[in-house]
Amino acid sequence: MGRAPLHTVAEQAHISVMHQLGSSLHMIFRYVKKSRSAIRSYLNNPLYYGKKKSTGRPRKVTSRDERNIIRVVSNSPKSINDIRAELNLSVCKQIVHNAITRSGTIVRQNITRNHMKRRSQLVHHETLCLLSNSVEWSLAQDEILNK
Image (cartoon, rainbow, N blue to C red; front, top):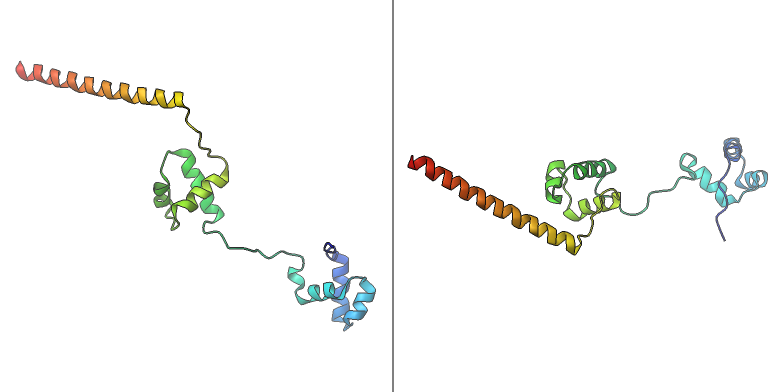
């Protein structure tokens, strides 16, 4: 069986007024046509009636920290440890990683075999260029020194 709907604002006003006038729970129950336990729960704490308590463990990272993490991650290819150091967060790497994953804006893409092959060729090509440049540089220095 489901829960009954909450008291309307008018019913809450009636309950409060009748209680202040000294009416018993039974009289309020007859007038408002709501259960005595529902009336009692309202009278115990009228300011927080119908509001849910937060359940579970609170997060280690605040929503502001999560926004800052996403801002830093989206602008640079920093590691998680660099992000923690920059934002002065005293949480483990997994917490930062979970914040990034939970945001959904930063998505890690899987690298295809073709992409891996092209990357290795690029690195190989850059290495050869650096070597050839250093060889040309050393030859130019030798020529200058020999003159």
